Length: 302
Image (cartoon, rainbow, N blue to C red):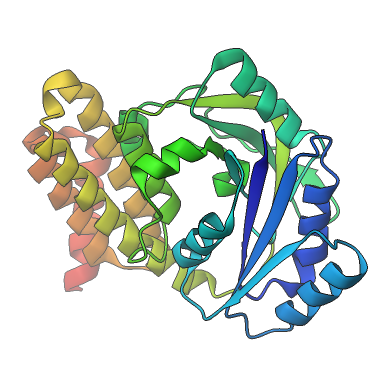
């Protein structure tokens, strides 16, 4: 089976060669590599053209105006020809056996979507993570958090999934991947973990961290609202209300963490009101939640 690897890039010129090289150095060779330059303002397009001319003649380069990750991935999908689609962020890299290990999972377990375990790296050293592993995440897990280890850089999926689910949502500038995996799970497609640490997520200081926290906070609120509406629309509470409430509570905790990172106590308090509204007054019975509400109120009115 042919694998189309889609790399969206925005201002990651410094990392492009290493990322692309990790694709062409895969032990699984039936691939095409598509880099979508999403309106970068650095010298990314010059670097890409040089790499194509001098090192990777089979590289496919798409240069477009900036539209965000969803737009870039969609452009790559539209250009792709493989039966399988894989994503790699331009600042991340793969181990040589990543695709081969995932293809073996497809052959042995017949899933629709495979994701890999990962490590962090800073360009020189590699570090393990402490995330809980979901070998085969369910719809409820995608309400709880993003259970896909290694972000989108770990994902490979069948084209038929995209044919049914459609493309990434252009209105989402963050969490577009969590939204997409949630839609895949809702559509009945199953996920399976390739428990090999084949994906390396680069840690760096590009971008404004406070701005990123605020953006994540905003889009978590938007996406959780969508997911709750979906739960209500399909009456999913009837299946396992306790598990769904637990997932909602966990997700609200993640949103609250982002709110407190940028000292937005009004948003932290909002998550508590949301918890009471969605789960009931028992949400306040937790001493930690009650204490957090008092602290937020104090910081808002002082």
